[in-house]
Image (tube, rainbow, N blue to C red; front, side, top):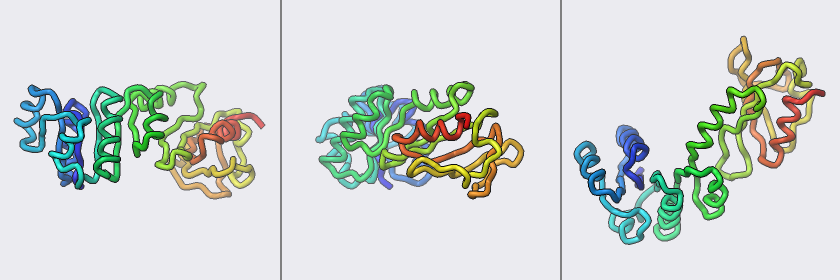
Length: 221
């Protein structure tokens, strides 16, 4: 794949090194001259000085043949513009943007950015895993934006403890994908699987039914 990385900071640098090691064609766009010089010393001619938000710059680096644009600067607005120009001016099939403010995730999706990565949300998810008051942790939103994969730890007082998965009705469009038992370890469940306290359950559900899923798995019945 030909992948353009906008932003030569620490994220862009390490990402590009991994992509190069995996055999991809990579080009880094970075505006800072000193940073470009340091990157060029290590990575060679894949570094180009320029503004990834400008159509002329993107045209000069062959964005029209790129398979993916990854914008990882420190600025959410710059990442949004770079991905929009790549998508709508150069028909890049896949765009991914780094966002600092999780509140921008919805607007990025509405404006056609294929995927976003929020370091804030990733850190928050790890923190929430350590908090007993947070039983349902979002892990991943699927490309459609309507479904997400969540992790649920079954508390001791849950009404589903000791019951078969087939004995209770899931919210519409939801399903249990994986159960990680305290002693059994991870396994793919069936309708006959009995849930136990402290089981970690990985499920798929819609944002609309996320609360219903939480109530079913962690609430008392």
